[in-house]
Amino acid sequence: MPAPDLAALDAALADAERDLAEQRRLTARLERGEAAVAAADAEVVARRARLADESADVRRLESFSPTRIWAGLRGSRDVDLDRERAEQQAAEYAVAQAEARLARARDEVGATRAALDAVGDATARRREALAGKEEHLRATGHPSVPELDEIAGLTGAGRSAVAELQEAVAAADHALARLSAAAELLSSARSWSTADTFLDGGLLTDMVKYDRMDAAQRLLHDADLALRRLATELADVGMTAVGGIEVTSLTRTFDVWFDNIFSDWSVRNRITEAADRVAWTLRAIADVREQLLARWRTEHAGLERLAVRREELLVR
Image 1: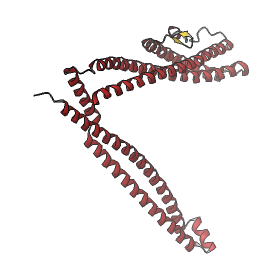
Image 2: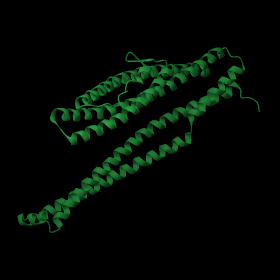
Image 3: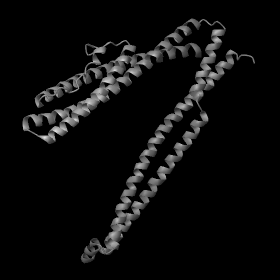
Image 4: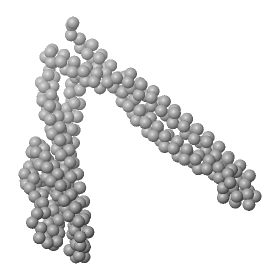
């Protein structure tokens, strides 16, 4: 089977560009349609609730209820009932209108999804068309091949860096979650320890305090594991310090397991020390996360520039 010529490759690329534009247009329409469905659905719920209230008012006047008795005594039952029935009918009409709008919105979303399905994966077709064009240029020794090679190398390195930074951000998020949970429990344990020390809380505060300390110990152990994972991920992206402290030192930050407790005062001091360490580490990891995100944004922007330049070489 003969290889496609340049004209055929350019035609395939043009078709893919057209389909991609249509895909983007339909995707935007689908987003608007789904938002309209959500709004219409909420309106139906509100209208039905209003109808339920109006129907309840009618039932109260039709039945032997205090409302009916009072209206009868005032001589206004028939007038009140007519008014409530009119309001009920208006509410029924409003519900019907809202349900019709919801049905139309759902139909439009369904039609848009069908159109998107018909377009298919235009992004993949365009990617394949660009790859075919690049293969042709390489085979014919086009002058742009050296720059295309450089772009390919830089793109591979950039994608690797982006992936590693994403893993590091995920590790930071995990560590922050574990540390936040530990901080909350330590705060609770510290308050109970204070009550036990200064207010002679007795057995009850002892039980609550030590229960929270045990839970905090488990969470600190989880935080320690999370920090070890974070240290590994940070080393992969060339970050060796957090808040001025070596990453390897983070793994020893929470070597506080509340052993050798001799007095309530020493317990409180240990809890305070652990809480302070957790608070400091939370701030440090949050700062590291921002640094990681800034680097991710830079790498991602670089990949986008490379992709744009590659397309310029292939589309022209």
